Length: 490
Image (cartoon, rainbow, N blue to C red):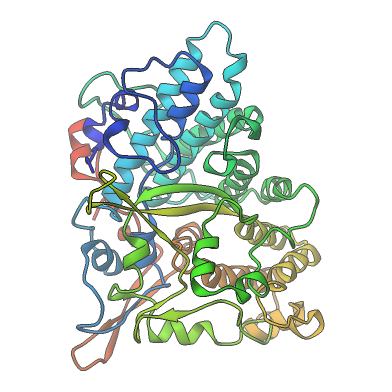
């Protein structure tokens, strides 16, 4: 697949280079096509989502990975460097550089669509696509800021470097940019998000879950405001994801349908648009589905054993499926690879993985955390108990329910907010294992990460990544210096 680097993305490539890879979800318009109809703009917006996975490097860097041992598992730079908190050496799939490049290519598509829409004398038929372009642009910048800039902190000025917020198609090679600040980056994200959301129409898409539909946009808003610690808005947007008021029927059915499914049936279902829990699905050129169980740094003996330990409910989430390809290579088997051949009769091609960007499960837990921070403990407990009701086999609300007494005892704290937030974070850590989301909580809340390093004799030494360690920010591609952008300090 052609690599596109940001310094020469030309952001004009939005129209001229998206034919470089075969698309699985949608088909981009021919590069010679003028964007002069709503349908053509809509087709272009199929490429306004980063076709790269962040899971590979984010999961390795988090405390959802461990060193399985010398001569155990496969060595890949995107896995090893991220685990050791070194600048990832490479630009292939699964690397920060690949994610950076793909994100700005997606932003280029959004900007090209917006430029075309804004040139129309009558934009009425284009408004849903304008909304999608704005929200997709906001999301791509948000994820870039999450990985490459410091986390937003409402108690500070947030004047550390952000990421370049690009709002117009690039017309020259090596245009000059500024990173701005975290504050200005978040302000621009919020502006695009709030402007775009009211314009979205689910009926504009053949498959709404391949685009920023209304529920996915509300899920994004809930996550965004969780980062900003504006908890009242988290509640508002999270609640809008389930207009009926009930999340119980739209979160993952771990202890019923998933539990009864074969491993292969489960893997197929997990990333399907038909799953009520999945809100936004994107494609990524990625080998994560085939490789994640075999990396040296991942889910090994210790993390597998931890997944079976009782949590605050008094039991474990026994309905989750853990498989192994020979100890200690464990997997939750969540991903199904899609191999796209270079031609119908070819034996070579590109591995793709369907990536879940937002789920109702995350939304529910984000709302629980917001309720806890607002001191609304009863509502936080209700959300937590809705969540656990689908995670424990033969769930019984009396014996398995989360209570403030259980929280206080399990976490040894008399502070309900502290205990409830820890409950949420522990549930999210396990629920989204091998999905990369744990890293978002680590950077958002400044959590310390502890990794083991195996010696030849299988003994462990431990290293930590402190909240102020500059290596928590992934390194920008070296090419950005050509556009006047400073890399992150080391």
